[in-house]
Structure formats: structure tokens, C-alpha cells
Length: 182
Image (cartoon, rainbow, N blue to C red; front, side, top):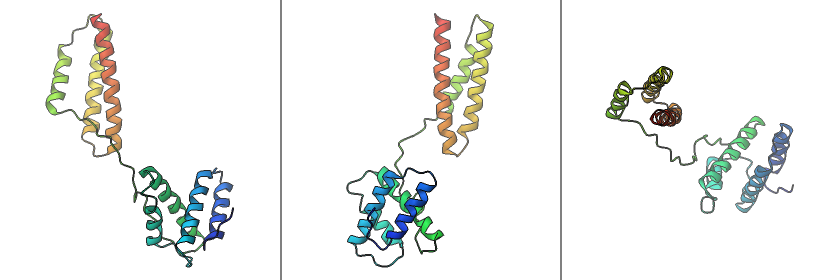
């Protein structure tokens, strides 16, 4: 491992530290080599990890990298900065979500009219088998409970969970409907 920058000893000791803790760290070594090369090319001589240096290094990959790669670089440099702080070297710690991957998930939330029609429809469902009738009724009540619990929550994590429950419930409802109609 040939490192030539002002942080060469720290990079080597950081890799040893991570490997001693059980990390494979192979892809991160490549990123650290890129960081070392960047430091040498930009003639960085001061043993200080500044905000400008961190941001400019990560931004230097924007043109040829996906957002996920930028997030990986930011995460690695953040961990390296934390390590530098532990060994008492001044380092800027980039915030966790400074670079974040775009998320396309938009949960579908039923309107009040749609919810009312679902719960009104449950009163008109007539099944010959008592067990399925009770089961369906209980599932609709469970669905109602989940809707009220997650719909009024402001937490996205719960909304995602609600979205998955909604899909499972609708598939189960469709399955029971097909059994009854057969």
C-alpha cells in the first residue's frame, strides 16, 4: 500500500484499524487511494481535514459517479474524519445526510371517500361460510386499525410499513373474494 499524501500514516493505520475490527474494507481501500491521490494532486500539505477539502473531494466525483457513489464516498470520509478526531487530528465531520440518494417512493394514501367506500362495502359482503365471514370482518377491522394508526402518523417509516400492509391486505381480500365467487 503506497500512500503519498500528508495523511499516509493515518490512512494506513485507519485501514489496519478497520480490518482488525472485522471489516473486509476492499472497496473502501480503493476510495482511500483516490482520496490520497486527490490530496497529492491538489498539493495539500497541512494535516487538517477541512470542510472545503472534504466537499471538493466528494464533488470531484459528481461528473462521473452516481449519487449512491457520492454517498459512499461521503460515508467513508465521514468515518475517516471521526477516526482522525479520535487520534486528535483536526478534521471536519461531514453530516450524515449531506449527500443523500433520491427516493422515488410516494405512498398512496386513500382519500376519505375511498376509505368510507371500503368500510361501507364490508357491511354488504355476504359469505355462506361463517368462518370466512368472521375472518373477513376481522381483516377489515385490522385494515381500519392500520389505516388510522399509520395514516395519521407523520413518520415515513410507518407510512412505508402501512403501504406494505395495504398491499398484503388487498391481495388477501382479492384471494378470499375469488374463493367465495368460485
